[in-house]
Image (cartoon, rainbow over all chains, first blue to last red; front, side, top):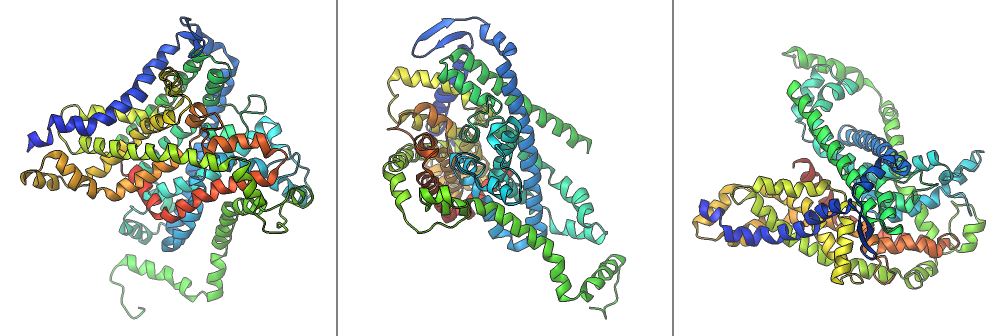
Length: 294
Length: 302
């Protein structure tokens, strides 16, 4: 039996193709990309050796600082928004709507599957000020407030992005967290209620601790996704005004393709990858520590 | 109920708390639910009104856009905007490109990913945890990291100018999550099933094809859907490898659409967004229960 389950030839047939494609198209390019950080130039014009120039430039480039700070700010705000909104929604599904939450769940989940570019263009039109007022400015005018040029200044543009991305994704986190909440045994909740724990108390001392593992995986999932944000911002603000809403991903894309600098582009990509790895490991480790304390 | 003598303290307390609630009138109960209903109504408006506004806009003429208030209804239900988007705006070409890039990638991801998930979870061999971990890192690495080497490679092998770079890249980037999710699903299949088939003399490949694969059929369906939405909605890879109007996928096409029409021609742009949004929604509505259940099961219990 062991010999059948460990059959080398079968293993090669089943795992081989996937591992080969994955290695050739992802693992090799990752290493290759690290190699690029020592060169300048691109695939079309050719490369010249640049030593550690790209890496030192990374530390002094003010654009990198702006992009990095935007990426981190965006990741934190969106992650908090997604998890808080998602958790509130999932609590509503479980404790208020109960069995009838199905249709609401479906509706709130809608925007998750919609193409980001389409959603971004929709929001662009909704918040537009010129040549024509969009929905939001018309509403503001309706209550006697002047139109706001939402995309004309850095902080309002940031909040439109935040609003859109939370609108887009909260349904997804609501379903994820809902799946964790329905797993909490009913008798546990019942006995807590009999002991007098209701409302906030019940959530704080029973529901929240029991849904910690799901919350944690959602947070990791969310941070990982938000650090890599690209399409929603490209389509909504295209990094503007100026470069105030340019994340690392877009800065890397521009450096590589608009300016044809693969070496520096790869260095930015490397920075982003390290950021993703460090954050994930950090959350994993801090959660481990908490679990052993309990 | 009230004639029963409570035996323990806890049920007594529970009944005492029930008391005022029972005496409350029906109208009072409805009043207590009011904030909840308001909240749900608000939620529905926030979720649905933007989409409704989009649909209404797609039927408006340029005159209506410029002269009427934004919440006004369109004067008539004419499909001129759709026709213009579909033909002049090339939406038809973009949809065809998206399909030609998405479907082959999806088929490859499923075939390669399910087999690999099986090999990593059901088969017994040294180093399988290491290989699974290698696949897992692929979930974390941002697409930007592999973009430039792949661009060079496709350029050198002459694949640039076809849809092959998209298909190859989508397949590879879809594999980590698929392999991980499939391994999780195979974990739930009892080992005895495969032991029995082995005792009956089936080779492991035979067991996979006639027992393993059919048993995770539903999961395969879910993974395929999740991957479909990822690939269909991708912008980064499509923008890099197919930024040429003959090859553009629907996302890239839509993004460039704003440049062509956007600032001045509202109607066709709204119609183009509409085609995109409601095409995707139709697929989702058709299969929605499975998407949500599968997503939750795959990512939470992993």
